[in-house]
Amino acid sequence: EKTQPLIDDPSKAGEVVFWLSPVKSWDDETAEECIARLVGKGHYYLFGERTPGRKHMKTGDRIAFYATTKGVVADATLSSTPERKPRPNGTMSEDYPWNCSLKDTHLYLDTPVAIDAKLRQQLDPFKGRNPEQGWAWFVQATRKVSLHDFELLTRKTK
Image (cartoon, rainbow, N blue to C red; front, top):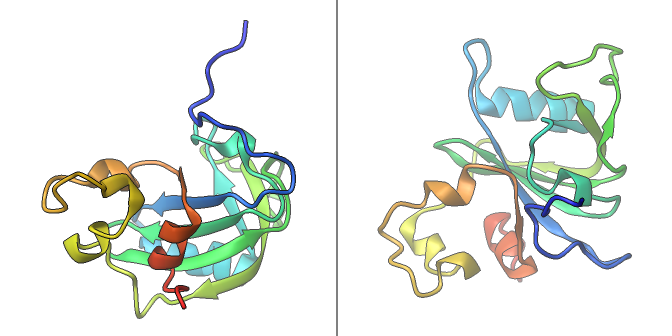
């Protein structure tokens, strides 16, 4: 028996998929510090067992990183699929055992893209919704986003 994937349409081979992944602050490290360390310095990112979409992520996909309460502060291209393996330093994370390599990393920690009402009005999932209403659902878990939304979230629009 197959369980229903959380992502409804596994992507076609060769098609770039865009992701948005939330990063929260911990006791000893802010979300921005975590993103700077993993994405900026390490060029990798970690996922938990239950990260939605993880099984559909592949080399060439693009991912943006949302620092909780701040905004989108980085983006990158996956240069490997997420694999259950040790981090580059050889240690294994029990909470986040899935590891993928990144390339073309861009950090803009000092100029986060705030997901405010003005931006939400332009994002696909908010069409027909009141942009002033609760929107935490949008950044609660890793999710697929459209190219249009990825470009808005990462200031890549022409």
